[in-house]
Image 1 (cartoon, rainbow, N blue to C red):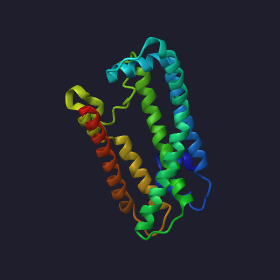
Image 2 (image 1 turned 30 degrees about the horizontal axis):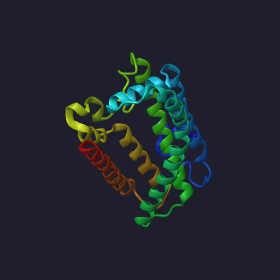
Image 3 (image 1 turned 60 degrees about the horizontal axis):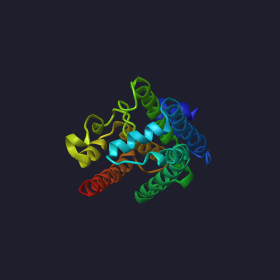
Image 4 (image 1 turned 135 degrees about the horizontal axis):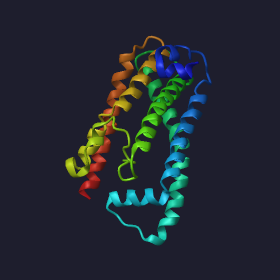
Length: 228
């Protein structure tokens, strides 16, 4: 089954998806469920109010106590709803980007095949991320020791703080992220397997370039807010 294969033998998994127009739906649904599960377990251990208070404290801002409960209710709804929106949008956009890269190198593929590539890559990425997230979550003694904004120690930004290197430094170092590199590799491999006349390297380098621009953009925004 491709869902299990993509975790251990991704090349064979992607090759088996050729011609399957709607194979992307199941991994998309499962990716959403994995995200919702993480939110459910997080809120089962820590209250939304506690999470909100921690995030506000880290940002250096304050919120009146009377507005905390109302804000916490909104945050809880947003935490559950965001996986549906962001997962679907991410897969649709990634598939479109992959299609553009493949066509740019005169390759032959279709948008449904790139949807398969994006969805199965995201599922493998989410599965690995969920396991690591829950490992860090259940070994953390409290909410403060659990870095909610950056909970998985697979990026250089995990090991520094804004006090050490500034917000821009944290944004740049967080881009050195093994989990994200894994996703880029899967997307490149899948696009190559689900298209004709395009090698993995022709997809990998454009994706790496886009990712670099994304990280630089985050660093730029951090610089603007830091200056403000």
